[in-house]
Length: 128
Image (cartoon, rainbow, N blue to C red; front, top):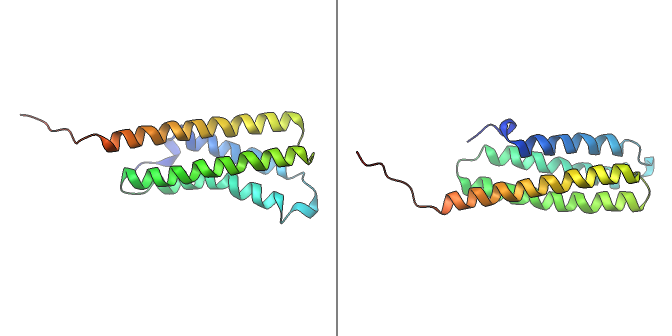
């Protein structure tokens, strides 16, 4: 178990979630229970799954939650694209949000690979 707040990927995904909340606050009111809610939930799912997974006992459990977080980044990517094409966010907002989302996704994949690599290594033995 580790403190999720110490993970760079958690901090970046939390910052992304705050940016998404800020950007979606200007969406049309009729989207409150549609796109606004969906993009916020997808994005918030990223740091949520990192936090939940970090509290699990085994690396395999943590990896499973990181994989779910990767899926949530893909969902967030699409919803940001949709919001941009519907003209709910500006080109500058799109570039910022998409860049941050892709960065988080890359960080998650790198962390996932490290965890899986470490999990597949045989335990080391200390000789005295």
